[in-house]
Length: 119
Image 1 (cartoon, rainbow, N blue to C red):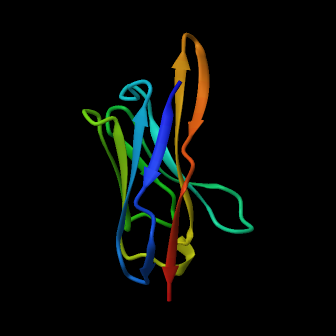
Image 2: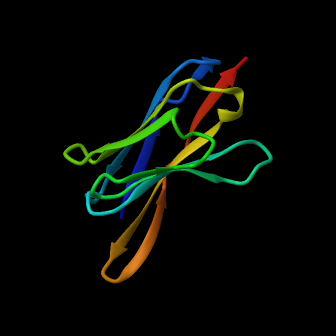
């Protein structure tokens, strides 16, 4: 069993920055890719960024060049540095990991953290 807890969401002005954290507990997630998703009101959940266990990263087109995903395996924690925030970044941000138990994959989600960008 893995618990994921996000933090760092806040109300910020356009052009501002935030750093989200996702702390994992229950099991180490160092061997697994982790990702950030977001969901705005009335919209589908979308993938924001992904980081592999080796630290390779990929980003959604809308956040490339503004967001940076990282992880600290010693702390079992993942981060999302968000710069130059725009109103369209307003959403609930979720961290996610797919973790194997034996040969069976399980999806784990955090409870979400609200990011609101005001213009």
